Length: 141
Image: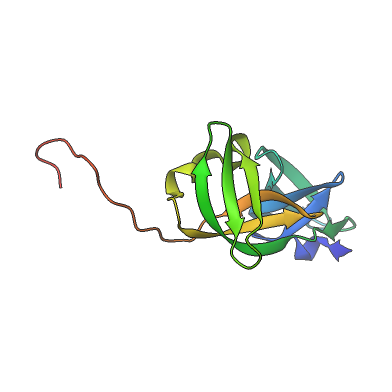
């Protein structure tokens, strides 16, 4: 169990039995009261973002998320397929969960896939991606 002080941006926690990642965190201090942490958290299974407030007495459980390197293979219309680069196991993640990260997935590129309870739940994109410009309107570079 972790305390409110451990709820920071990038931390992965369990809320109601589901894994969430803290994407925004703000510490608030009320006059003569104990502090609280106002956060925006994203559900790693569904991709939905919700606001949540943690008080000083609240305890949160850290989510046991494993990260594995994988190659992005292809998109079949409903899910994105990946292959583990260590054991060549293939798995998929629903398009709803990937969301806007789909624009940065290029066939054959290495990426990191998050696993929770042995199942792939989301993908982590590298901070920089090399893409090729296919077409631009005249007069723009």
